[in-house]
Image 1: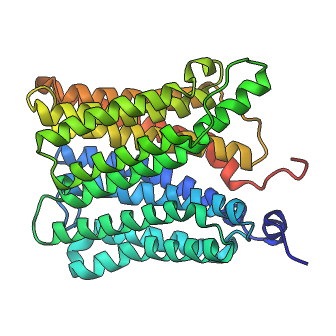
Image 2 (image 1 turned 135 degrees about the vertical axis):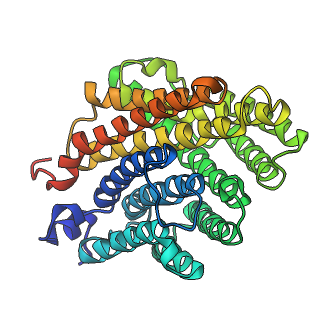
Length: 401
Protein backbone atom coordinates (compact mmCIF):
# COMPACT_ATOMS: atom_id res chain seq x y z
CA UNK A 1 0.00 0.00 0.00
CA UNK A 2 1.42 3.40 -0.96
CA UNK A 3 1.98 6.06 1.67
CA UNK A 4 0.50 9.51 1.81
CA UNK A 5 2.52 12.65 2.56
CA UNK A 6 0.96 12.79 6.03
CA UNK A 7 1.99 9.19 6.74
CA UNK A 8 5.54 9.86 5.62
CA UNK A 9 5.74 12.88 7.95
CA UNK A 10 4.23 10.95 10.88
CA UNK A 11 6.85 8.23 10.43
CA UNK A 12 9.60 10.76 11.11
CA UNK A 13 10.39 10.70 14.84
CA UNK A 14 13.22 13.22 14.82
CA UNK A 15 13.02 17.02 15.15
CA UNK A 16 9.78 18.52 13.83
CA UNK A 17 11.93 21.05 11.97
CA UNK A 18 12.85 18.29 9.51
CA UNK A 19 9.34 16.94 8.99
CA UNK A 20 8.51 19.06 5.90
CA UNK A 21 10.52 21.22 3.51
CA UNK A 22 8.99 24.58 4.39
CA UNK A 23 9.99 24.32 8.06
CA UNK A 24 13.81 24.59 7.98
CA UNK A 25 14.07 26.66 4.83
CA UNK A 26 11.54 29.30 5.86
CA UNK A 27 13.11 29.57 9.32
CA UNK A 28 16.76 29.70 8.25
CA UNK A 29 15.94 31.81 5.20
CA UNK A 30 14.27 34.45 7.37
CA UNK A 31 17.11 34.31 9.90
CA UNK A 32 19.65 34.79 7.14
CA UNK A 33 17.70 37.68 5.61
CA UNK A 34 17.74 39.56 8.92
CA UNK A 35 21.36 38.67 9.75
CA UNK A 36 22.68 39.46 6.26
CA UNK A 37 20.95 42.86 6.35
CA UNK A 38 22.51 43.63 9.74
CA UNK A 39 25.90 42.62 8.33
CA UNK A 40 25.35 44.70 5.19
CA UNK A 41 24.49 47.92 7.01
CA UNK A 42 27.52 47.36 9.26
CA UNK A 43 29.68 46.91 6.17
CA UNK A 44 28.17 50.04 4.63
CA UNK A 45 29.23 52.10 7.66
CA UNK A 46 32.76 50.69 7.50
CA UNK A 47 32.52 48.70 10.74
CA UNK A 48 32.71 45.24 9.17
CA UNK A 49 34.81 43.78 6.39
CA UNK A 50 34.08 40.22 5.34
CA UNK A 51 36.86 38.08 3.83
CA UNK A 52 34.89 37.70 0.60
CA UNK A 53 35.93 38.10 -3.02
CA UNK A 54 32.71 40.00 -3.67
CA UNK A 55 32.60 43.74 -3.18
CA UNK A 56 30.17 44.65 -0.34
CA UNK A 57 27.28 45.66 -2.63
CA UNK A 58 27.62 42.52 -4.73
CA UNK A 59 27.75 40.35 -1.60
CA UNK A 60 24.59 42.04 -0.34
CA UNK A 61 22.77 41.54 -3.65
CA UNK A 62 23.94 37.94 -4.04
CA UNK A 63 22.98 36.86 -0.56
CA UNK A 64 19.47 38.20 -0.92
CA UNK A 65 18.75 37.04 -4.45
CA UNK A 66 20.53 33.69 -4.42
CA UNK A 67 20.93 33.05 -0.69
CA UNK A 68 17.66 34.08 0.92
CA UNK A 69 15.49 33.53 -2.14
CA UNK A 70 17.14 30.17 -2.81
CA UNK A 71 16.06 28.97 0.64
CA UNK A 72 12.48 30.20 0.27
CA UNK A 73 12.11 28.70 -3.21
CA UNK A 74 13.39 25.40 -1.82
CA UNK A 75 10.93 25.50 1.07
CA UNK A 76 8.06 26.30 -1.28
CA UNK A 77 8.90 23.66 -3.89
CA UNK A 78 9.64 20.88 -1.39
CA UNK A 79 6.21 21.55 0.10
CA UNK A 80 4.24 22.14 -3.10
CA UNK A 81 5.69 19.46 -5.36
CA UNK A 82 4.30 16.51 -3.32
CA UNK A 83 0.86 18.11 -3.71
CA UNK A 84 1.42 18.63 -7.44
CA UNK A 85 2.70 15.12 -8.15
CA UNK A 86 1.08 12.98 -5.44
CA UNK A 87 4.53 11.70 -4.46
CA UNK A 88 6.17 11.63 -1.06
CA UNK A 89 7.89 14.67 0.48
CA UNK A 90 11.56 14.92 1.36
CA UNK A 91 11.81 14.63 5.16
CA UNK A 92 14.27 13.75 7.90
CA UNK A 93 18.02 13.66 7.56
CA UNK A 94 17.84 13.92 3.76
CA UNK A 95 16.11 17.26 4.24
CA UNK A 96 18.62 18.21 6.93
CA UNK A 97 21.52 17.46 4.56
CA UNK A 98 19.97 19.75 1.94
CA UNK A 99 19.72 22.56 4.51
CA UNK A 100 23.36 22.03 5.48
CA UNK A 101 24.43 22.29 1.82
CA UNK A 102 22.57 25.61 1.57
CA UNK A 103 24.30 26.85 4.73
CA UNK A 104 27.71 25.85 3.36
CA UNK A 105 27.02 28.05 0.35
CA UNK A 106 26.38 31.04 2.60
CA UNK A 107 29.63 30.43 4.48
CA UNK A 108 31.66 29.83 1.32
CA UNK A 109 30.55 33.09 -0.31
CA UNK A 110 31.20 35.08 2.88
CA UNK A 111 34.77 33.76 3.37
CA UNK A 112 35.61 33.28 -0.30
CA UNK A 113 38.99 35.01 0.02
CA UNK A 114 40.30 31.81 1.54
CA UNK A 115 39.29 29.58 -1.41
CA UNK A 116 39.71 29.49 -5.18
CA UNK A 117 36.87 31.27 -6.95
CA UNK A 118 35.84 28.10 -8.80
CA UNK A 119 35.48 26.19 -5.53
CA UNK A 120 33.29 28.90 -4.02
CA UNK A 121 31.03 28.76 -7.08
CA UNK A 122 30.85 24.95 -6.96
CA UNK A 123 29.90 24.94 -3.26
CA UNK A 124 27.29 27.67 -3.72
CA UNK A 125 25.76 26.18 -6.88
CA UNK A 126 25.65 22.62 -5.54
CA UNK A 127 22.52 23.39 -3.52
CA UNK A 128 20.26 24.75 -6.30
CA UNK A 129 21.52 22.13 -8.78
CA UNK A 130 20.74 19.34 -6.32
CA UNK A 131 17.35 20.88 -5.54
CA UNK A 132 16.56 21.11 -9.25
CA UNK A 133 17.52 17.47 -9.78
CA UNK A 134 15.25 16.40 -6.92
CA UNK A 135 12.32 18.43 -8.27
CA UNK A 136 12.90 17.10 -11.81
CA UNK A 137 12.83 13.53 -10.49
CA UNK A 138 9.50 14.15 -8.77
CA UNK A 139 7.91 15.92 -11.74
CA UNK A 140 8.97 13.18 -14.17
CA UNK A 141 7.92 10.37 -11.83
CA UNK A 142 4.58 12.06 -11.18
CA UNK A 143 4.17 13.00 -14.88
CA UNK A 144 3.36 16.52 -13.74
CA UNK A 145 4.46 18.25 -16.95
CA UNK A 146 2.40 21.38 -16.23
CA UNK A 147 4.90 22.51 -13.63
CA UNK A 148 8.02 22.09 -15.75
CA UNK A 149 7.88 25.87 -16.25
CA UNK A 150 8.66 26.35 -12.56
CA UNK A 151 11.63 23.97 -12.85
CA UNK A 152 12.80 25.86 -15.95
CA UNK A 153 12.74 29.14 -14.03
CA UNK A 154 14.71 27.48 -11.21
CA UNK A 155 17.26 26.41 -13.83
CA UNK A 156 17.55 29.99 -15.08
CA UNK A 157 18.09 31.14 -11.49
CA UNK A 158 20.96 28.63 -11.21
CA UNK A 159 22.43 29.91 -14.49
CA UNK A 160 22.14 33.48 -13.23
CA UNK A 161 23.96 32.58 -10.02
CA UNK A 162 26.77 30.97 -11.99
CA UNK A 163 27.04 34.04 -14.21
CA UNK A 164 27.10 36.26 -11.12
CA UNK A 165 30.06 34.25 -9.76
CA UNK A 166 31.85 34.51 -13.10
CA UNK A 167 31.34 38.28 -13.33
CA UNK A 168 32.60 38.78 -9.78
CA UNK A 169 35.56 36.47 -10.49
CA UNK A 170 36.77 38.53 -13.46
CA UNK A 171 36.52 41.76 -11.48
CA UNK A 172 33.24 43.12 -12.84
CA UNK A 173 30.73 44.91 -10.61
CA UNK A 174 28.41 41.92 -10.34
CA UNK A 175 25.70 43.88 -8.51
CA UNK A 176 24.93 45.60 -11.81
CA UNK A 177 25.78 42.68 -14.06
CA UNK A 178 23.86 40.40 -16.37
CA UNK A 179 23.78 37.62 -13.77
CA UNK A 180 21.90 39.74 -11.27
CA UNK A 181 19.39 40.98 -13.85
CA UNK A 182 18.83 37.43 -15.11
CA UNK A 183 18.25 36.24 -11.54
CA UNK A 184 15.80 39.06 -10.83
CA UNK A 185 13.99 38.33 -14.10
CA UNK A 186 13.68 34.63 -13.21
CA UNK A 187 12.32 35.52 -9.78
CA UNK A 188 9.79 37.96 -11.27
CA UNK A 189 8.60 35.32 -13.72
CA UNK A 190 8.19 32.89 -10.82
CA UNK A 191 6.03 35.46 -9.05
CA UNK A 192 4.07 36.11 -12.24
CA UNK A 193 3.43 32.39 -12.85
CA UNK A 194 2.90 31.11 -9.30
CA UNK A 195 1.35 34.34 -8.05
CA UNK A 196 -0.97 34.26 -11.03
CA UNK A 197 -2.31 30.96 -9.73
CA UNK A 198 -2.47 31.50 -5.99
CA UNK A 199 -3.52 35.16 -5.68
CA UNK A 200 -6.86 34.85 -7.50
CA UNK A 201 -7.47 31.37 -6.03
CA UNK A 202 -6.91 32.40 -2.42
CA UNK A 203 -8.87 35.59 -3.03
CA UNK A 204 -11.83 33.65 -4.38
CA UNK A 205 -11.72 31.19 -1.46
CA UNK A 206 -11.78 34.03 1.05
CA UNK A 207 -14.59 35.89 -0.73
CA UNK A 208 -16.71 32.72 -0.86
CA UNK A 209 -16.01 32.01 2.80
CA UNK A 210 -17.05 35.50 3.86
CA UNK A 211 -20.14 35.59 1.64
CA UNK A 212 -18.89 38.42 -0.57
CA UNK A 213 -20.46 38.60 -4.03
CA UNK A 214 -17.29 39.73 -5.85
CA UNK A 215 -15.16 37.15 -7.67
CA UNK A 216 -11.70 37.56 -9.23
CA UNK A 217 -11.13 36.53 -12.83
CA UNK A 218 -10.09 32.84 -12.77
CA UNK A 219 -6.33 32.23 -13.10
CA UNK A 220 -4.46 31.66 -16.34
CA UNK A 221 -7.00 32.93 -18.84
CA UNK A 222 -5.88 34.01 -22.33
CA UNK A 223 -5.12 37.54 -21.12
CA UNK A 224 -2.86 36.15 -18.38
CA UNK A 225 -0.87 34.16 -20.92
CA UNK A 226 -0.43 37.23 -23.12
CA UNK A 227 0.78 39.23 -20.09
CA UNK A 228 3.25 36.48 -19.18
CA UNK A 229 4.67 36.36 -22.70
CA UNK A 230 5.02 40.14 -22.90
CA UNK A 231 6.56 40.25 -19.43
CA UNK A 232 9.08 37.60 -20.47
CA UNK A 233 9.98 39.54 -23.60
CA UNK A 234 10.34 42.84 -21.73
CA UNK A 235 12.50 41.28 -19.03
CA UNK A 236 14.75 39.70 -21.65
CA UNK A 237 15.28 43.16 -23.17
CA UNK A 238 16.17 44.42 -19.68
CA UNK A 239 18.61 41.56 -19.05
CA UNK A 240 20.44 42.04 -22.34
CA UNK A 241 20.11 45.79 -22.99
CA UNK A 242 19.29 47.62 -19.75
CA UNK A 243 20.29 51.00 -21.15
CA UNK A 244 18.15 51.01 -24.32
CA UNK A 245 15.22 53.41 -24.52
CA UNK A 246 13.14 50.64 -26.09
CA UNK A 247 13.76 48.58 -22.94
CA UNK A 248 12.43 51.41 -20.80
CA UNK A 249 9.33 51.64 -22.97
CA UNK A 250 8.86 47.86 -22.83
CA UNK A 251 9.00 47.94 -19.04
CA UNK A 252 6.39 50.71 -18.93
CA UNK A 253 4.21 48.47 -21.09
CA UNK A 254 4.73 45.59 -18.66
CA UNK A 255 3.74 47.89 -15.80
CA UNK A 256 0.44 48.70 -17.53
CA UNK A 257 -0.37 45.09 -18.48
CA UNK A 258 0.53 43.65 -15.09
CA UNK A 259 -1.55 46.35 -13.39
CA UNK A 260 -4.60 45.39 -15.42
CA UNK A 261 -3.98 41.74 -14.54
CA UNK A 262 -3.77 42.56 -10.83
CA UNK A 263 -6.93 44.68 -10.90
CA UNK A 264 -8.86 41.72 -12.32
CA UNK A 265 -8.23 39.88 -9.03
CA UNK A 266 -10.23 42.48 -7.05
CA UNK A 267 -7.76 42.94 -4.23
CA UNK A 268 -9.63 45.95 -2.85
CA UNK A 269 -12.35 43.58 -1.60
CA UNK A 270 -9.90 41.81 0.75
CA UNK A 271 -8.95 44.70 3.05
CA UNK A 272 -10.38 42.88 6.08
CA UNK A 273 -7.88 39.99 5.86
CA UNK A 274 -4.15 40.83 5.80
CA UNK A 275 -3.16 37.30 4.71
CA UNK A 276 -5.06 37.90 1.47
CA UNK A 277 -4.43 41.58 0.76
CA UNK A 278 -0.69 41.13 1.31
CA UNK A 279 -0.64 38.78 -1.70
CA UNK A 280 -2.09 41.58 -3.82
CA UNK A 281 0.32 44.11 -2.28
CA UNK A 282 3.30 41.86 -2.96
CA UNK A 283 2.25 41.30 -6.54
CA UNK A 284 1.65 45.04 -7.00
CA UNK A 285 5.40 45.59 -6.70
CA UNK A 286 5.86 43.72 -10.00
CA UNK A 287 4.20 46.46 -12.09
CA UNK A 288 5.49 49.17 -9.75
CA UNK A 289 9.03 47.93 -10.20
CA UNK A 290 8.60 47.74 -13.97
CA UNK A 291 7.39 51.35 -13.96
CA UNK A 292 10.25 52.69 -11.84
CA UNK A 293 12.99 50.68 -13.58
CA UNK A 294 11.59 51.77 -16.93
CA UNK A 295 11.53 55.38 -15.71
CA UNK A 296 15.13 55.12 -14.47
CA UNK A 297 16.18 54.02 -17.97
CA UNK A 298 14.28 56.76 -19.80
CA UNK A 299 15.09 59.48 -17.25
CA UNK A 300 18.16 58.52 -15.19
CA UNK A 301 18.08 61.77 -13.20
CA UNK A 302 14.55 61.12 -11.93
CA UNK A 303 15.38 58.02 -9.91
CA UNK A 304 18.59 56.07 -9.47
CA UNK A 305 18.74 52.64 -11.06
CA UNK A 306 19.61 50.87 -7.80
CA UNK A 307 16.68 52.46 -5.96
CA UNK A 308 14.29 51.50 -8.76
CA UNK A 309 15.59 47.93 -8.84
CA UNK A 310 14.93 47.60 -5.11
CA UNK A 311 11.22 47.98 -5.83
CA UNK A 312 11.47 44.58 -7.52
CA UNK A 313 14.02 42.96 -5.23
CA UNK A 314 12.86 44.12 -1.80
CA UNK A 315 9.26 44.87 -2.75
CA UNK A 316 8.08 42.16 -5.13
CA UNK A 317 10.44 39.39 -4.03
CA UNK A 318 10.63 40.37 -0.36
CA UNK A 319 6.93 40.96 0.32
CA UNK A 320 5.64 38.16 -1.90
CA UNK A 321 7.89 35.56 -0.30
CA UNK A 322 6.88 36.65 3.19
CA UNK A 323 3.21 36.58 2.17
CA UNK A 324 3.60 32.96 1.05
CA UNK A 325 5.74 32.00 4.05
CA UNK A 326 3.24 33.27 6.62
CA UNK A 327 0.24 31.69 4.94
CA UNK A 328 1.96 28.35 4.31
CA UNK A 329 3.31 28.17 7.86
CA UNK A 330 -0.11 28.78 9.39
CA UNK A 331 -1.85 26.36 7.05
CA UNK A 332 0.64 23.51 7.30
CA UNK A 333 0.95 23.74 11.08
CA UNK A 334 -2.80 23.54 11.69
CA UNK A 335 -3.41 27.18 12.63
CA UNK A 336 -6.28 29.46 11.64
CA UNK A 337 -5.54 31.42 8.49
CA UNK A 338 -5.67 34.77 10.25
CA UNK A 339 -3.03 37.47 10.59
CA UNK A 340 -2.56 39.05 14.00
CA UNK A 341 -1.17 42.49 14.75
CA UNK A 342 2.41 41.24 14.75
CA UNK A 343 2.02 39.82 11.25
CA UNK A 344 0.51 43.08 9.99
CA UNK A 345 3.50 44.97 11.45
CA UNK A 346 5.76 42.47 9.67
CA UNK A 347 4.10 43.19 6.32
CA UNK A 348 4.09 46.97 6.79
CA UNK A 349 7.74 46.95 7.85
CA UNK A 350 8.75 45.49 4.50
CA UNK A 351 6.70 48.10 2.65
CA UNK A 352 8.29 50.83 4.79
CA UNK A 353 11.75 49.43 4.07
CA UNK A 354 11.13 49.60 0.33
CA UNK A 355 9.80 53.16 0.53
CA UNK A 356 12.79 54.33 2.59
CA UNK A 357 15.22 52.75 0.13
CA UNK A 358 13.48 54.41 -2.81
CA UNK A 359 13.49 57.84 -1.18
CA UNK A 360 17.20 57.39 -0.45
CA UNK A 361 17.77 57.24 -4.20
CA UNK A 362 16.20 60.69 -4.58
CA UNK A 363 17.04 62.46 -1.32
CA UNK A 364 20.79 61.94 -1.52
CA UNK A 365 21.71 64.36 1.29
CA UNK A 366 20.19 62.07 3.91
CA UNK A 367 20.66 58.80 2.07
CA UNK A 368 22.72 57.16 4.83
CA UNK A 369 19.97 57.83 7.37
CA UNK A 370 17.41 56.37 5.00
CA UNK A 371 19.60 53.35 4.29
CA UNK A 372 19.74 52.76 8.03
CA UNK A 373 15.98 53.14 8.38
CA UNK A 374 15.36 50.78 5.47
CA UNK A 375 17.71 48.18 6.96
CA UNK A 376 16.16 48.52 10.42
CA UNK A 377 12.63 48.00 9.09
CA UNK A 378 13.83 44.97 7.10
CA UNK A 379 15.40 43.45 10.21
CA UNK A 380 12.21 44.14 12.18
CA UNK A 381 10.18 42.36 9.50
CA UNK A 382 12.24 39.21 9.27
CA UNK A 383 13.05 39.19 12.96
CA UNK A 384 9.31 39.33 13.60
CA UNK A 385 8.78 36.36 11.30
CA UNK A 386 11.33 34.34 13.26
CA UNK A 387 9.79 35.30 16.61
CA UNK A 388 6.16 34.81 15.55
CA UNK A 389 6.46 31.83 13.24
CA UNK A 390 9.66 30.18 14.44
CA UNK A 391 7.89 28.32 17.28
CA UNK A 392 5.32 26.96 14.78
CA UNK A 393 8.10 25.78 12.49
CA UNK A 394 9.93 24.08 15.35
CA UNK A 395 6.94 22.35 16.95
CA UNK A 396 5.02 19.32 15.60
CA UNK A 397 1.63 19.93 14.00
CA UNK A 398 -1.16 19.33 16.53
CA UNK A 399 -2.60 15.83 16.08
CA UNK A 400 -6.20 17.07 16.03
CA UNK A 401 -5.64 19.51 13.15
